[in-house]
Length: 170
Image (cartoon, rainbow, N blue to C red; front, side):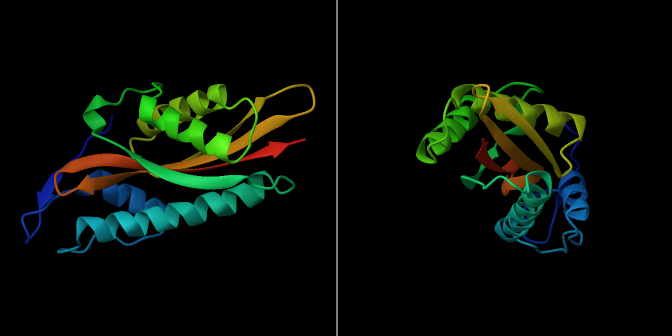
């Protein structure tokens, strides 16, 4: 979905430096210093993304209480296509929504999963957020917000992290 340049650091760990550093820069983080472990770099970006989604939720939906938030990873990037709804992402979202007691969540889960892959493609893997709403009936809707970024999933696999929140607007 995006072009990655692989750089081998002193520990023989493959870091997909271009896409990861682009996401880090947009998140306000410094480029990866030599010797950074994959887990540390991923945790830093995930934490920044959680903070960004929390902040954007308060801005986008100031009068809607978030029912919950969660995160996940999609990989390998070579198997993801723009606009597709990866089954594992849809299942995770739908399960979270049921646990948060949000109504009519199957379509919303697919919509969010499709948005993630489409936006990752459009943004070249750079960190971003997207929001939306799914009508349940004439009086209710599910408001949602998702953040995403390119990360290293392991020493030799590039993927994406996503963070999402949802709430019921009445």
